Length: 144
Image (cartoon, rainbow, N blue to C red; front, side, top):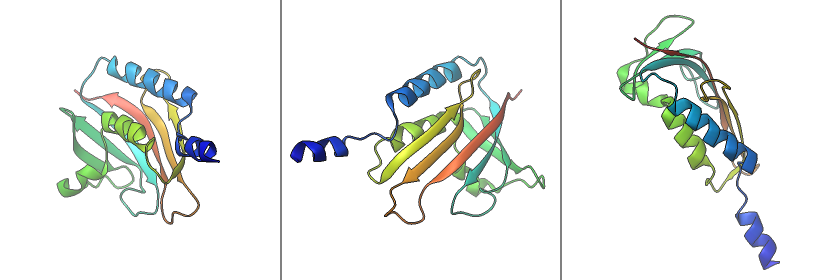
């Protein structure tokens, strides 16, 4: 009985295959050949706009410098920029999520060319209320 409890406690929401995909994605991203970039994203979560709207995130010098709502062209105020991660930070969030005690599963997908996460879903245990969500990422492009 103690052995079963130990095994259950060691369950990682990322399978060995998903961990390999994560490493491969990070390696592809690291070799992308450009530093500054933009990407489009939307969060599906128990939160409101502008997180739940498609936006373009501009990353300059390793920091989110600007976020624009695609449907309106509205620029998100600077004090809200930390709501969006850089791609590097998104990789970090995926790695950190492996250790979340109440997380049941993680679903991830990666761009086959550049390696960035195109989908990151966190599925929490059924006894956790208002948790979990999905981040979609698309259209990564270098910024001049």
